[in-house]
Image (cartoon, rainbow over all chains, first blue to last red; front, side, top):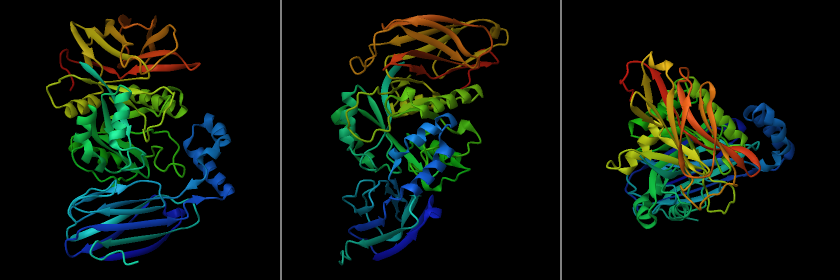
Length: 155
Length: 340
């Protein structure tokens, strides 16, 4: 089994999940996942300032807003954040909630990348879910690859 | 009652922490903690090492998970099965909490006023809560040197507001501990009161959270009891009085243990201020010295529906809340009919 997805997301897609199901027809010795997205950060300071002004107005107590704006630099650069979770035919196999813009993950009966649960890789309907926590750039492109150990990396 | 020092909000490399579970547990032991809850973001995979690390470090590890959702972070502790955080709906977070309860766990709001999206999506609590009794606690002190942080002051005010509205809800601290980094900032400790040591530790600790047998501090351990009609009630209990009894003053005992986690924290020498607080504000106040001891205070008759103790003093040049107990609740009704 091999799946390759190229995708694109914008600010309006933030706070949504994207599910990529696939069918595993035979048991496998292990499953590889490679996920990368880009860009990671918003370098435009003017745009960052606008986003943070809106955020501070929404979340910071009125009497603290001026101070928060003075110290707004500590939030820069603003970051895109997409995290991965995995389900097999029986249920949840964990999540990898971290800020890395590229993650190479593996799971098998004997071992699993931190965040994922080791266990047999059995036939059934699997799913990789991308959780788009924050998209601060006008667009963010990503590439998701999933393949079984039997397939090999093929590149 | 045995009070155990806990750190209830931690992360490892299984999510975005920069520490392993053995490193985290060893760090907690060095700081005089007896128990941590492992609350990685959206995964429980780190718990595979739990028993081995408990054996090696002597630290008890409670299973947990921080629901890191788009509209709020909800810490869950003690659930025996995974509950799907991805289903969280902006208007129906309490369905998730109910599912956690069905699996034996408790759920609390993590750092409810930390700035949200896009700096930290979900860090600010945006979920509607139709019925507050669906949630077990509010993490009112987040991070280090917690008492003076403005986000925490808002969370503490939220807790007080909920108590005034009649909600029975606990308040905790959580460092949101991601790495073994040296800090000279005061660290918060959540003490959980274990009532029955014959029941399994995990069950008893989760019950303490659910019942609000909780005391939080950056220094000494502060505990509270109230007596009426020959019965004594502890933190988290409901003191039921008959209508006639509400006219009588309630005798309150407060205990301070400066020897708790001795050597792991320090406060400048001073005379502290001990307060009893209820829904009418400050009910009683007295000066106390930095020695282990118990104090009897009398609160005015009638009025309050809840009571907590607070210890105030000067820390790092600022007047700050140093410790607070969770509430004892008062209810007027049939005497002896104790609400569970």
